Image 1 (cartoon, rainbow, N blue to C red):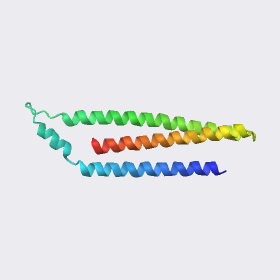
Image 2 (cartoon, rainbow, N blue to C red; image 1 turned 60 degrees about the horizontal axis):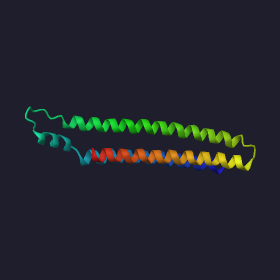
Image 3 (cartoon, rainbow, N blue to C red; image 1 turned 180 degrees about the vertical axis):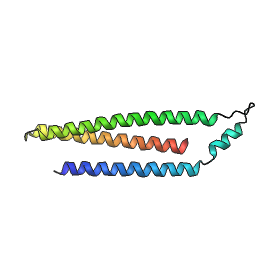
Image 4 (spheres, rainbow, N blue to C red; image 1 turned 30 degrees about the vertical axis):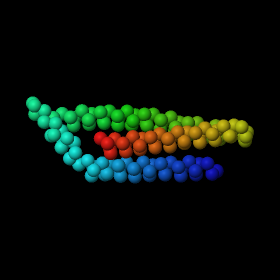
Length: 132
């Protein structure tokens, strides 16, 4: 029963990595860009005194962040459903080598999909917090 232990280990590593990169990215972005938006907007000096450049940038960032979060939730839920389905197929394979291999592949591909989705979300959040 090495497969469930491997999956558990991978999931724990992914959760820790996402947490560390997310916290580090936010802290780095806050330290690096503190006041940069205000300085850029005040430098625009529109004739009517209205400096809304920060609002448009933050709205685009929030839209991208919301879309990425929704897609990540959908992929995460689909991956968990496929892991459960693969586990069910693994248990009900009845010792058939082909059915066991197929169920194992389903679980492995679902975990890989979950890992790719988690890494993609970490990269997008890193770019959003460091650029925006």
